[in-house]
Amino acid sequence: MKVFLLGLPGSGKTTIGKKLASALQLPFVDLDKEIERVEGKPISEIFSEKKEDYFRKLESSQLKLWCARPEDFVMATGGGAPCFFDNITVINQSGKSIFLDVSASEIVKRMSRAGVEKRPLLAAGGRDGLKDHIEFMRSNRIGYYKQATFTFSGPSIHVQDMVEVLRK
Image (cartoon, rainbow, N blue to C red; front, side):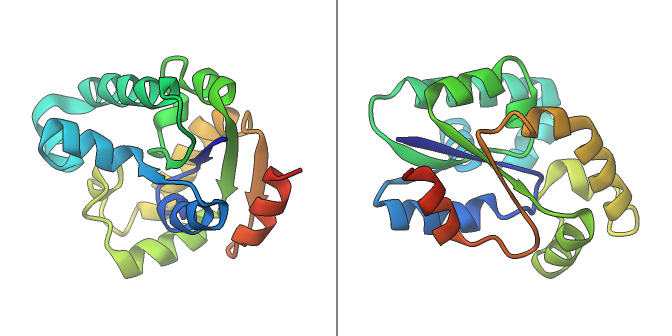
């Protein structure tokens, strides 16, 4: 089974994805890390040098390559991955998708601890406008996220609950 975690930056896709992959005994894939590996540079540099349009095409291409692979995995997608081209359709045709629905205020708390600088679409506004920017991003992306197979909401999402739902 291929499992794709969807959600805003800071919603826990990577953290939960690693735990979920371990619980399901599957490899974990971080789509952003795969893009960095292929390009040989951090995503922040890709955005700064080649801009978002180039990144989104690369992201879609990498997503489709992974979806076409025969092996199963748990993937943390980038926050915008499901929202461009036909990516949400490709995700849902390839496996099960899980939307991690975390509030903007919780994401701001998490990013205040972790640092927003590594996130190119959020770093520009600085910490002051972060919550507004996250809420704006959510309003633009929610229609894609709601197409996920499953949704888990709240500040504390439990991997065991996901495992149970996926194994039904």
